[in-house]
Image 1 (tube, rainbow, N blue to C red):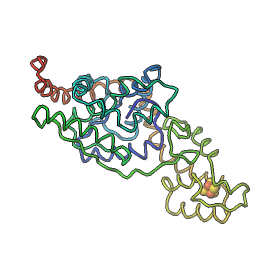
Image 2: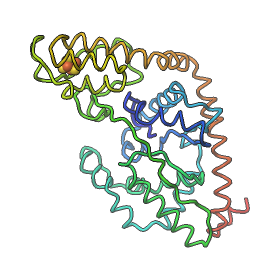
Image 3: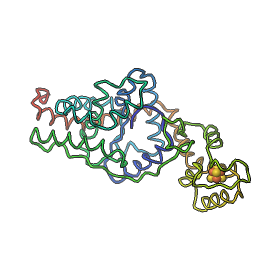
Image 4: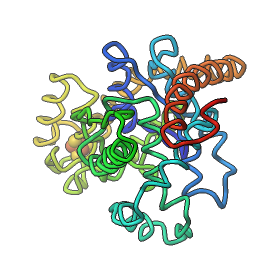
Length: 324
Ligand code: SF4
């Protein structure tokens, strides 16, 4: 996960909870991609350190366990950079130029100059991140499949050039993520400024939900609404019980309940969902030494595995450093 902003409830429900479950089935590697954050944020890196710490806190608060999984910081495992460099030697420029997000992001982020070598090479770094652990699976949603395809192509090209099966072609571990809407009804995203962040205080969360967009037809208390048109109801679908959902749907469409009452139920349920995470966050934030220790130990574990792969890669690519 890229260290370029705070984590929100959409990330938690959409990805992080799934990662927590995967820990019991696989040998997982989870990391905070601080170098990736620089590819678009190089001009102002002032928030990267804080984002990295916040992400680590959220990883742990959500239930990622440094005993079960390898949790680390990308820039603390320099082997990723070395493999990125070596893979860049064999990656055709055309492959990178045709990655859809290359042009899309340049269009979307016009305020930034993304015509850089680092930004173009983002998929190569991403490939290095994955294949350096000879990963078999990458947990992704359907929309991220094209990104994984280029990693598979680069791994295949390496194996073909050097006549070796060094890298397995990583496969997608597809997951059905519930789509989480934001406060304005669009997908929850930090770029839309419509998110509930894990670092928000309970008061801030309450205020955000109280002022959330509803079905526009419910202007007055006695106007009947259609819950399906209300982002509040979409969040109820994730956080509320079946009985509460039925109560809200009926109450909204008959105007038996008002939006304030409806939102109170949602606030209660989101609080119950976030409460253990808030408690854990508070504990972690007050123990910065422990966080540093977790990041160090995880990165050390990752370095050992990554170095093992790099020994083979250096040898395959005829480098003197393979003897070191
Ligand atoms: S009652 Fe609830 S679901 Fe219906 S419009 Fe109001 S907030 Fe939305």
